[in-house]
Image 1 (cartoon, helix red, strand yellow):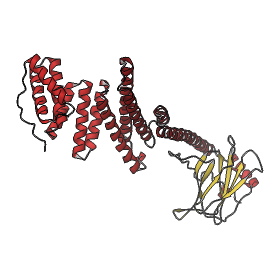
Image 2 (image 1 turned 90 degrees about the vertical axis):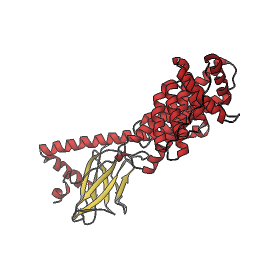
Image 3 (image 1 turned 90 degrees about the horizontal axis):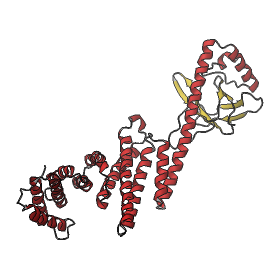
Image 4 (image 1 turned 120 degrees about the horizontal axis):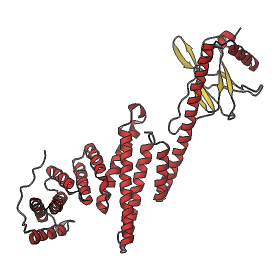
Length: 428
């Protein structure tokens, strides 16, 4: 009799593989392996017969390839199936209560006589096995089926989410190439929201969204920077400020997802490192554009401090590191946070005492802070740095006229004359 060896209900292990980003579930598929002497090898040429559990005579058959894999594509949604598996030199086995969408089935064969069974033999033996099942085995089977259905539902949701993410990314990329920034931003956000915590897709979508927002901000600024109507220009610059702030937020989200990702979730190290680099370069560019356009939301101060610290820490090139330090100082100056700007400009000058932009920025920020606090010492220090800058800067340097004018105002209004200062010592 074949029943005893054939119907070890849990002798065939069922494993359902969760679909990863970019993978699509097949209707019913799996792998057949032979277990012998403690090793497992794929079984080529195994015969897989698939039947509807509730209907007789509507079976399908496939044979495993050299890799031991099989798949059934012509299955109907909502139906329940069972399969019998046989191979030369193996004892036959089966899996029951299968549903379309179950992928990654693992069927384990053991050595045997190579017998195959008919549909009638399979269903008769299955009915006998069910009638003889103990209450403990029945509960075990029910729990097994419950877990199986939960995995199936999870796979279905993953497949749907993966399709949504891929479609949004594709549409966003197409819109970006066409310079349709509005659609690109919307599609990247749609894809991100579909799977907001997945390290395999969320950073890509957030980085792309940030890049599109930067591009839209630049376009809006260039189109409206010479607009003479004050109301129209103010509305346009408000959009620039909003886009650049949202861009910095998107890159920061990307960075934090990547930075906090468990090691087990990092399946492609090269892509992971690439996305981290893009997040940092993107957020640096967002803050650089805020300075260049003078459109900075003061509420982004903490974000600038935290993310530019990450940029500076990651930069290995000395000149680029100092340039990033200057961007942070400039952000605080343009945002009106003179106290923070002073602290950051001094860091730049410690690293590079001859940095003209830092001299001018420090002088302007000290004067601004001195006026706000009615602090003559700050005004004097600011005047000193402005004079140091004005003496060293060429006539066409961007802050030269402002510095000379501000020095003149300090002389006339505050009776403050610049004094020679000791250059800040370069940090080793």
